[in-house]
Image 1: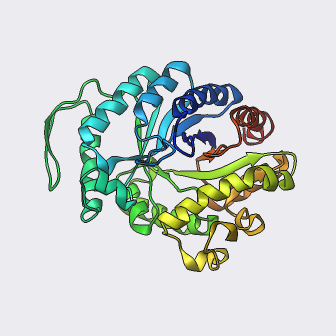
Image 2: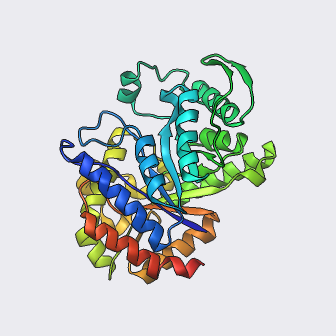
Length: 339
């Protein structure tokens, strides 16, 4: 199993120092590579006052130039918002710089204001997304193509083609994981649903892959939030308040949860309703090295995932130096247990 780091490139409250946060992300990516992680990944969102990264490709290129081994990717790039040819070209350039290390995770998007920003309607978004995937795959083939669909029309050949870039398709529904299986792509999960929900979708994903004959090309990429400390108590006191704020944003703004498999969320109405005692079970990778190893093994037994990508630092912290130390310690005290 491979290990990755997902960086949240944010600077609350108003993004005054977002450039510094980007530079810290480049440094953290190099530290992650040195520590033994297999990949580093960036997210994407738009119009966030804290400067949340709206375009991952420039930063991916900077990381590619500073690293030698790790995968460089997105979880996820909001493909629905762009001409897929432009995405194909941007990712191919980064893949050339990186020597074939790009893992482009793409997603449908669900936040209404982002669609409004791009001048798009959510109506028809699933069909537009599927077309974008088809066109991106054609563009990456290195061959001439002539494509005409409901939303896109394109003819030509993209150059340079990527060296060895891989396309991943993120999803948070039965329909979404079926789509990922249909296109023969790895499925990066979300980091917020508990393992019971992910297990249900994993079964659907694997069943669909068997139906489409894409089993050999599919794999599960589990996203989780994580922090390594000397004890669970330290995690709750130092790290949890920052993680809770991040999770609350998703619960509040993008409420897509599976009620029958997440009973602890029934009485969550405000951020303070998230209790660490309930929320970290089957959802977070936290605690001592022994705690983290046991949690990862349990998740691995349940899901048989091929990649575990973790976020350690959130918008409000911990601070940069603590983040780097956590990455180094995780690489030294947890990752070797799985090699």
